[in-house]
Image 1 (cartoon, helix red, strand yellow):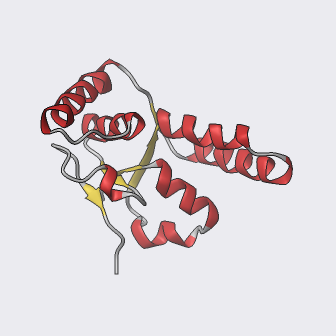
Image 2: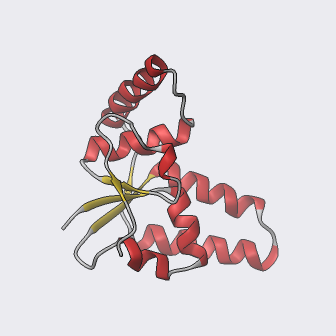
Length: 133
């Protein structure tokens, strides 16, 4: 069993193609999402209209009903500060939300599952889950 944190980009892909879940997540894996990913998905809901808005809202509702949401708490804050300092020292800035997701994974001992691995590569303490097969 692996502890996994699903990144927003991976979730967006999964929303469009549920088979992508099976390419990465095993039956015995323990999955979670960060609170910031839920916020990013909710922005997608708010920016949508009509049927697409209802579909996106249903996806977010289903997700948070079955997958634990890890909060941005003081423990994650400490790891976030460490990662933010590291990327600034290295001169390799990253997106603020990506660093929060990475910090959430780091704080909880989880691997990041992302459709955009470049956002998380070479971050200290961060492990990426790649597609199987």
